[in-house]
Length: 271
DNA sequence: AAAGTAGCCTGGAAGC
DNA sequence: TGCTTCCAGGCTACTT
Figure 1 (spheres, helix red, strand yellow):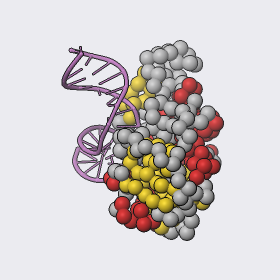
Figure 2 (spheres, rainbow, N blue to C red):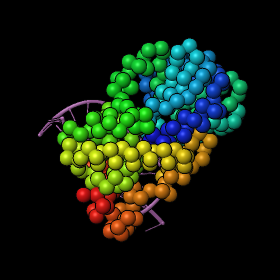
Figure 3 (cartoon, chains in turn orange, brown, cyan):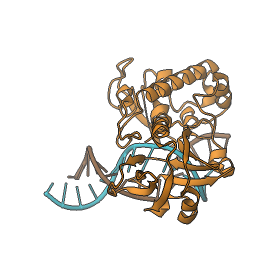
Figure 4 (cartoon, rainbow, N blue to C red):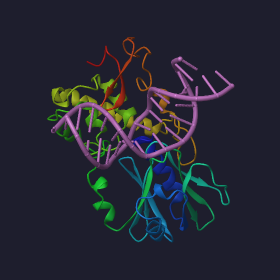
């Protein structure tokens, strides 16, 4: 379940290993993993050279020469992996890129929630999903964060998960930052003091930065571009720990549903 | 404006 | 053992 830190780690890895390499041929092994037609996709990408790789929200963006972009959403189980020349096709491979130097870049996705989309020139900026993304939590100010939340009547966790409000946060980092800030996930945002919102912003940034430093979190499927697991899952304080004692007060952690997502929290520390 | 739900998917775990 | 059910969860679409 790659969220901001995991996608960031993957982007950095791919930037190092893929920049300067040229895509020779595209194989749409599972065409529905591609947005739009497979022929358009191939026509945009074949012959393109990777000039850089970056992240926006949970999107992986491979920047190509002559203003082309490959956007990848990994969703739950997607991976972008580099393989040696001649490597055999694996069960969940969905799209394969044969590189001019013989290597392979493969999009693998067991559950097929993820997708790839190719864009020409300004089309990326005009894509509704992209256009509507909120600011990056690691690039915005505390004041901006407070402004975007403090008048909203929705539950604080729903807003953290809403990519139009803030980009890149998923269930793990929402729960972990709310716990660290001592805020119950169901709290309406407009009932949280500005001071407490600032605290949440600080904890959110700290958790995200730490997770990037630890190579992300590996629950089930996440692997970085080199196939390595992350380590931040060892630092979880609430995510997946319902029934266990709170690290701060010892009370038993509970779970509840907030906007359809399982949310783990401490009834003692998060009022 | 906010919340609820179904749908998209597979496989591992838990329950019977 | 073998079956069924549940759960994970980002995002869209639709209804209340």
